[in-house]
Length: 281
Image (cartoon, rainbow, N blue to C red; front, side, top):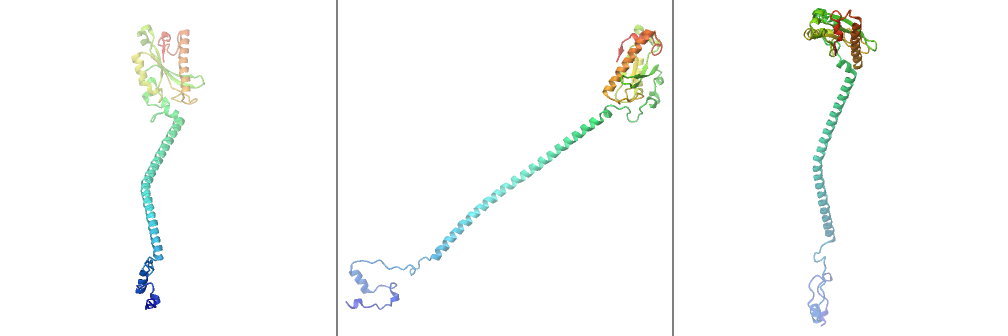
């Protein structure tokens, strides 16, 4: 029994590492109870705290990296999507700017043209001296200077208008021999207002045809600013109306004076009854 409790031959440092002595084992067994084994985790090669910390750090790093990678890939996709949109916006902006500038140019050109038309409207509408011609009938080509060159009897007149402007006119009348052959013994009288260019001498061919074929008297007038008429206020619609009214008034007064006086001058050599015929304008 004493030998059973003798000190063990193993050194103290080996306690807990090697197998228990037989006596201890037997006593333990003889006691009928079992004791929990004395386990040393370090001796068994357990996990160190350093490795745990390192592992946690690696996992966290992986999570952060994977998260940042997903975010960057998403941003890259957004940039790739935004680049075409920005390009489309750039083209649309440039096209809008181009159309806006074109509209500005068109509007500017329209305003300029309108201003030119307003300022130059008289020169555009009325052309007293067409290119290659002269204003006065005396400076026309020889055949267009006077009705005399066409064998037409006429009077050269200066008619005064309401505002004091004197306009030049020609009265081409039928000879007495022609009047005798006409129904009623008298021709009609036509008041001729020519077009917007040239002078009355440029219409001599038309006058000759009406005089010979229609057998009418022709009273043709140059407007103010045309031919040998005075300028007055220059060619205007209002001025032309005054020229026309003065010409018609002159003719009516001439008819009345010839009828009352029994002839003399003007168309009297043709036939006094001519003044009883209507006037065509």
